[in-house]
Length: 142
Image (cartoon, rainbow, N blue to C red; front, side, top):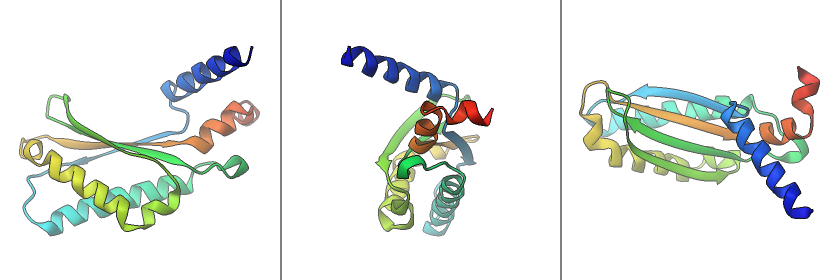
């Protein structure tokens, strides 16, 4: 029976994520990396979006972890490069490690950024929002 419960919860979490619960997305146009100032400007924009999004998420029982995934898409929408900064606490987006991770992704995406219409897409997953909904909070709010 314990295994059944774990599988059931796992399926529910997958369904919630597919339905967009706890998921926030944004995108930024990419340009050929002309200089470090333009790269830093993009890193700052991503961090500002993440911080604002984290301010809107629920934190039941102190669950405040998030996962950030980044992807680079070409002008046809084909994903050509991806990364994940893993599951982290919000404080990490106020430290240099997250900025370094975003910079590293931009370096990896550099060859693709030179194509017209390329964009970077970010998806932020709030584990607190998922926990809140699993615990019946989403039904109460509806």
